Length: 439
Ligand code: ADP
Ligand code: ASP
Ligand code: MG
Image (cartoon, rainbow, N blue to C red; front, side, top):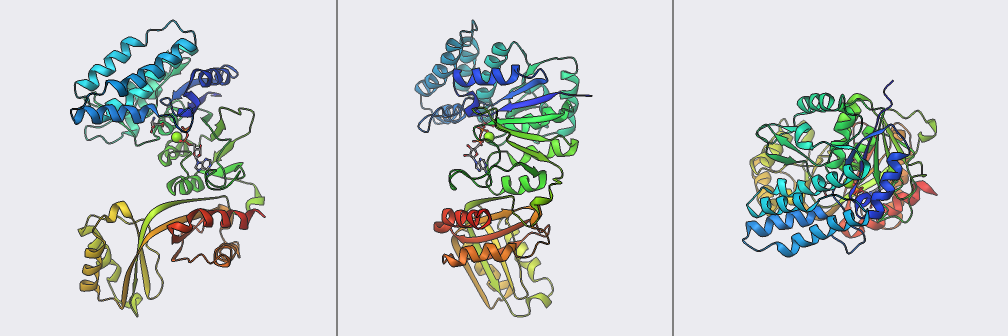
């Protein structure tokens, strides 16, 4: 039986030589931890920089014709410091100089950003005594920059078949011309998931700076409970709605192969963390929620028209207007005579009034209004399905404190209730919902 564990370590887990030591202890304590996916060094404290951000900055400086030596020096110092503090006899200067030269010569922003993981991977492989495998060899994008899952899976399983232990940097791959392409931010989680799927691992461990997936963002709710077990579906809803612990696209490769993910804390390896699986059999979840997440910066366009439901093509007209303006929407809850469009502000950018005018012209609604400055909160849980009283508890908790709910939507899976509220009420509302289900 394949006992292989793929481990991914996030930026804060590899931000300094002390963190590298913790990572080595974790890997060496279990011989099945054979394949390691590192992120670039993250912040050591709240005032620190992420190496990835500095690399993007270097690239932006070059594009604007500004010298980037001072910024690059911060990058150099960080990597050199780690090598010296770990007592490694390893030449990191040569790859660093090459990266600097490539950036100066106008390398792409994806290339620049990817070097954070690349350089960290070189150091980690040396420190662990593992083989270094460049992600450009095994993570495959096509010419248009689209990720190719099939080719990647094949490349990983072929390349790792006879490799006992290896470090494969996260976040990037290469297209068929050899050009570096990155995933979106936080994408090392995706690489870890792809490696786990490529080697058909028994487990994908995602090591970070919190002891698992918490019921709510710990920056909003004080000391939220850890979720012991969660399904891929619930996790995807929560990640999509802003619970940034795990990149939302990291779910698909392991879900398909039925490989569980465990979220663990590098600073507290003894904590159990969270297990993400395809199904949770724990009956005690019935009638309870699993977690809460949310995002700010939305607008809602609320539309009313008597007998809307019997007017053929009403919603189609609205959607074609959005399409005409190149705007995609997040949700579209509807009632008998009402429909709301929930749209991210970044999508709407200056087009809101024009869209409203066009809807008035084409659809002749009784009432139409834009509510700007909204936040959307998702309350998620597979135990919510067909359990009466959950929605009432949620709305009561908010209305008791005079929080005005401007939009409600329950996903068809009955696993997710979305509420739209004023952005200023966001933190308070998340706390109220959390407390309603935890007291
Ligand atoms: P890494 O660098 O290890 O990939 P991230 O910063 O991407 O780590 O993700 C971990 C962070 O996610 C935590 O430090 C925490 O602030 C934040 N976070 C947001 N929502 C949640 C949640 N529901 N549970 C745990 N952490 C959360
Ligand atoms: N280093 C990249 C980022 O900061 C990728 C990652 O950390 O997963 O987004
Ligand atoms: Mg992350």
